[in-house]
Length: 406
Length: 223
Image (cartoon, rainbow over all chains, first blue to last red; front, side, top):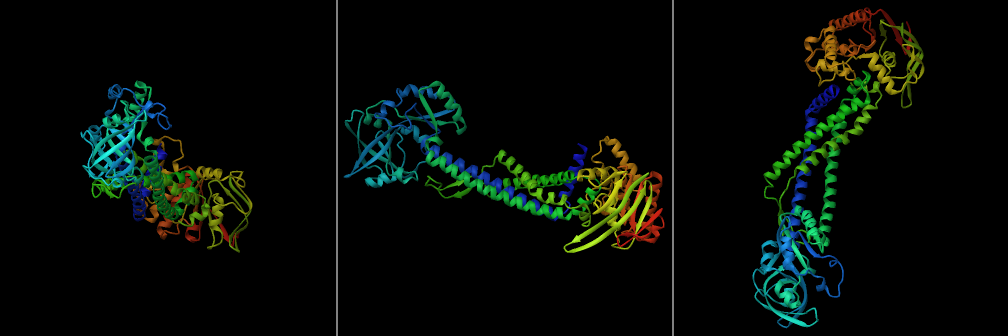
């Protein structure tokens, strides 16, 4: 322990031996650490915001279906819908983390208005319940269904195709399970867009009761779930499987695999690349600083080796010194990053619309303890890695030659 | 007892196409406890000979035996161990670690020792005391005079209870009075502790203190 303590003391003193060079090295590491830390906070903020948008625009934290229904074609889909939804909803409400439940049915219909007829794919929803949670839909006109008994929300493309606006009347024509044609008159309460042109050109929403009457069913196709938080999903899904084994619980990121999951994977890959570049800059900064330091101390290394210090002992001293530089620089960087996010970036960064989202928003810098730990360890590890080659070189110079540098 | 036996040692430096014969057919025996000076002009091979004695160089030709053991096929690790256990160095420019105090500069070289902390401390204090520098133990090299630095360097060379101290122009960076004082100190330590001192110099007044003087010229012993 004592030799290590003296080595550590020597290393720490060497950190401040050439103050200007140490400051440059510390500055490089601190800048890298700050950039990385803020970038990770930005990344987390972006991901959280994007996730919240995805959850609150359409999917909820997840949805429940009858086992075997999802992902397959069915001759009579409604036969595979959830029976006695009232009972199921009651049992689900008792499960951990549940805040709200949203029963839904899919309804394919022809929408007719003013001589125009356009095919659409809609959902029957609980207008009042959903209005409270799904607040991230982008309305270009009007608003949600609320308590309108015969309301209609339309995707922007579909509304344009029909040439309708808020308060216009639209006739829905569909076939029920017996293939009889059924119709309902509804009134436009809002026009929305999601950012997906393909979705917005066919999507509509009507009250659940209207959809069930059109389809002549009292079942629901799915139940969307709003939980107390994203982290509550695993416990909820486990409890749902136990309480209602006939149902399948699917999280939002699997439901929205095409947009959310792929976008997250894409962003993650991009962030990893940028993170690598930042670390490379830190690595080169350290490599340069340590190379200079080691070159300057070649004579000292020769003296140590002449007096019986092994290459390993000398290398350990330099590794400790680099590690200390990395830790110190990392800590300064974290402090600077925290100051930046608590000061100038307190209100976040204005961003253009993300993939699948048509609304621009502000990304808050969400700094995390684990990120801080990761950054500081990465700085130390990169610093140590940056000094390996210069130290290896210096300890392998013939001793007599090294002594000539003294 | 013979400490070093050197037979027909030659060493040559290559600088591109140029070859410089630093030592040619050197034969030398050094007894334990000797106070041996190596004299000669610059480029005569003094430092090369000291480097070979200190296991920093291997000669191109010839044999070197240290305490009866041939050094020819020793691995780097074994050479390091031999240097640590038996050989101390003193340099013209002191070569102290600037960020460590005088005490720590000496203590550093006991890092590998297994002795308890109190014993190590006592040994460092005693060695600093022996070279007359204990009052400056807490000072760093930049606040010490050249003579004081060289005393610390001597303490550093002796603290491991080495049997031989190799000193390359130990007084060259010191004024005459300090140089004589340092040489007197080395002589005293040689007599009191029986440590073998081999040092190079071309200062006649320093040479006068030597028990034996080896004259080198163009890499050959001339007297």
